[in-house]
Amino acid sequence: MSFLQIHTLELPAKSWRLGELREFCQGILRPHDLEAKICHQVILAIDEAAANIIEHAYPSKNYEGSTFQLQIEVGEDNIRVELRDHGLAFNPPLLSRSEMNQVTLSKRGYGLKLIQKIMDEVQYDRTGQGENILTLVKYIKLPQYY
Amino acid sequence: MSGLNINVDSSRQDVILIELEGYLDAHTFEDLETLFEDLSLQGQHRLMVDLNRLKYVSSAGAGVFIGALGVCQENDGNIALIRPSAEVKEIFDLLGVFHIFPIASTPEEAFLALVN
Image 1 (cartoon, chains in turn blue, brown):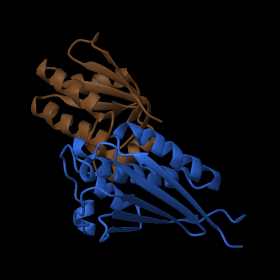
Image 2 (cartoon, helix red, strand yellow):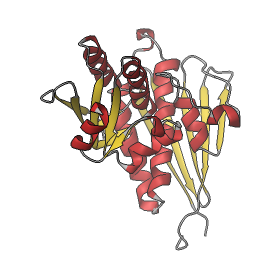
Image 3 (cartoon, helix red, strand yellow):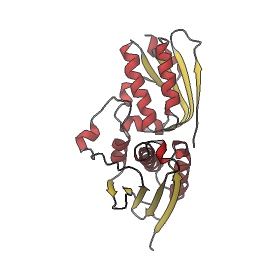
Image 4 (tube, one colour):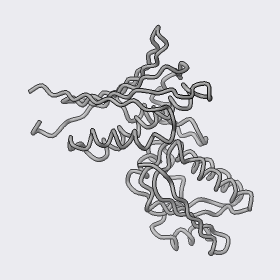
């Protein structure tokens, strides 16, 4: 049986909407009987990516009214997440494995590290139309009854 | 899944108990950051934070603890975490910093860890 469920959400790029974002993700993931830890990790990675968009893609009041889009696909063996926005390009270099495991004691800047630690694939693209697309993939194993 | 309530109990001498309830994320972290800064300005560097009713922490929230821990330790203090949930513990673990905080299962235990 072919199994693919796609869910989308568009939200204003405001940090006070992050709770709604997490709730949306939880509503999608919960029915799949995934391990609680996997659910929490994926929601955390999405929350971090959205927080980065809000802070870095839309950094000033000039971007008032801006939005971002979230798409989540739950497949047989992976969860694929896409976040799209039309803000400033934000493409910090991906961390190497040793950098990921390095312990730093700063106040900020942990978002990308967490995303990379949690997700199995992380890819950033900037389109010719000025769109940022962050794609995250987590490999999973759904219960047999699917 | 949003909002953060902070309760501060300063009834114990030299050690402040902070109880967190709700969600510590990129929207709410500044409330806790401001509290830590205010307490530092007041010379309070021994803090115990009850996380029992904290449902969620993002990296912005964890960063507040990491930043404040450095300030407290520079001033001969510390921050003890009380009853972190598995989810809250996990983010500190992912960042590799869980072990740098004293962990306690009750405020009394945290108090003893901070004053001894």
